[in-house]
Figure 1: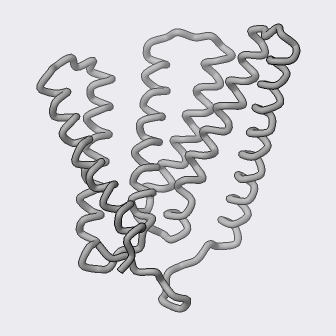
Figure 2: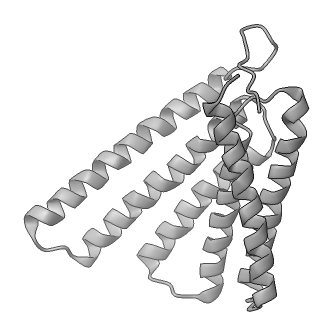
Length: 200
């Protein structure tokens, strides 16, 4: 599979000023949260007493880092206008997962419906992030239908996972079907990785 490296002037849209500013701000917050996580971890090791509040603060910081990382993973596809609105949905779901997770940490809620809402946001984020990463390589036109198949498999895996969670499906046949879709999706991802590493 060949990867076409776009040259300047081929008409592919580059990052817009507003998008670039937003991405820079997200990167600053992301690395700030990484530093905060490191400081909290060191303080826990050095102080010796790790209270429940310390745990909540660390969990909050970790969720901020993870949700921003997920949103940033969608940024290249968003800037290239690839698979819109999937990258926007993935980024928004990633940030929503972080917000809901932080609410859960500080409220201490163990409500089953709330847990499913957090799981839904996380699954949608994962599906959007994966689709955005699949769209990252710029493929030759003859290989673009393969991307559509991969995105379709990604969407099918997301739907199956959501149904299993909300309907609490406990079926061996269902699990095998989901596993088959996941394997096919992983094979497609392996093809993308190979296409990037093995450039003609």
